[in-house]
Picture (cartoon, rainbow, N blue to C red):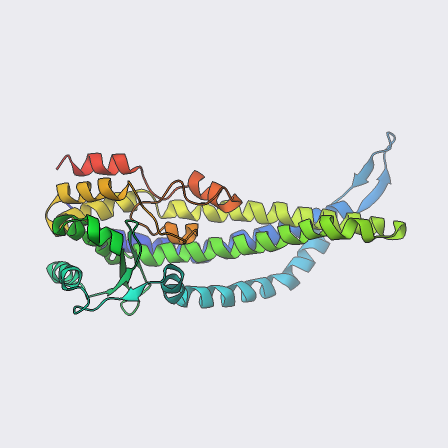
Length: 335
């Protein structure tokens, strides 16, 4: 299996990162404008027609004026949020999965495999982390040479032989070489911001239904209804924005996993070993106690049963960033 086009992939991923940095604010601002436009339309009436239906209209000038005054604050708040989340992502991941740094003296076998592969491809040695977990998992993370990390579980080390482990580590090192990790983290942060906003709005709406309805006097009912309408419109607009930011995961297409498989197979020199490793990992992928799809996106195999049926998990499965393990194994076994 020949791995080609590394520099082209790096350039492509860098371009996609820039496009997402520009596209995400555009999606968010479009959702804000849509929210303002809907509220403006619902609040403006020119009376009733002959059939008794209320005639609403949109005051576009008023919407645009309000939007221009709000937009800088929205962009500024999201920019601060993004910067904090982006640069703290590596430590957040390490704490979420309870990973510990691994030195040569801790596990010479793993450390030497990583070191030999990095020397073979001429890349700097990344940090190696280990998670005390019986499930089989490995993933790469980080945004630059100071934070690039390869994480493996104790379960993976117990089950795979040296050739299989070299194939898996080669796969993760290829993600780092291709800048896949930086692109993925950019996507994760963007989707996470919209997901958080949507969750907050949904909770506000739900709390209003639970605690607000019975405590209002009759004179406040119209205000209550207006609040519910506003919150409902906010949920719809946030859901639309969430849908489109999820599409950024397609920017990190399924092809990146195929290319990482190809790079890992060439790096370790044994495509069959990587295919064998994927077959073993597919029997028990994931991490115990880590039910976060933003982290699961980085796993060498995405655990499809993961998530517990939440709103975000449903969409994450619908817009999966990983191809089927069977197809990956089939391609590796052709070489």
